[in-house]
Image (cartoon, rainbow, N blue to C red; front, side):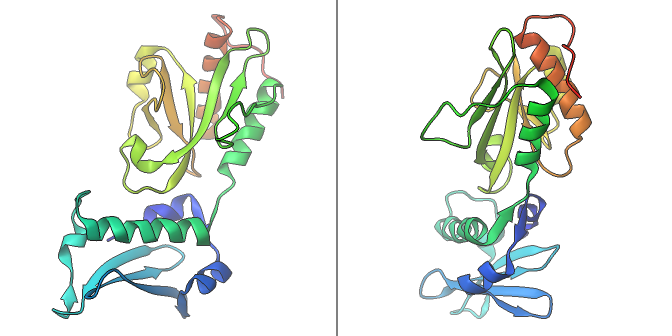
Length: 221
């Protein structure tokens, strides 16, 4: 089973992998974890690939149901809990989030706010005059957007005209807004492949709508 999508937003830390129990041979890291009396989760990790399989000791063969998309399969659920924990403990999130925060603050000359004490990863950006939200950044699991896996991803919700939202939805970087009005807001997934210039142009529109202006305001260089 391919879990290489984790490598798009995260970088494995060798020291942490070794401490977790991974063994390295050449450029390949491997890890095994017992799921029950007969099933073993076997992971293989390189710079470009992250794969998993479940081995059935009783039958000396691969446990094929693990490869199917079945959220009700307890073996798959347990295996993916372990994989998610490994990513949490041994992978380093790329600095896409931090760079985006800096880009928005520099562009509009305003600072972000963290209004929810119990959720430091959800931050808001307000316009200078109307003090209305033009962007909300959140850290959620990928499946909240209909993507594979429960890895944590950073998204930014911005406000756009409904017809523009319809034209942007691609299931890769642009999604119907998570946790907000899906007619007027869109969720943008942050990763290294996002066209940042396009994203910033869209935030100009969001800023203008929040300020209730027809033209985007003058951004700071």
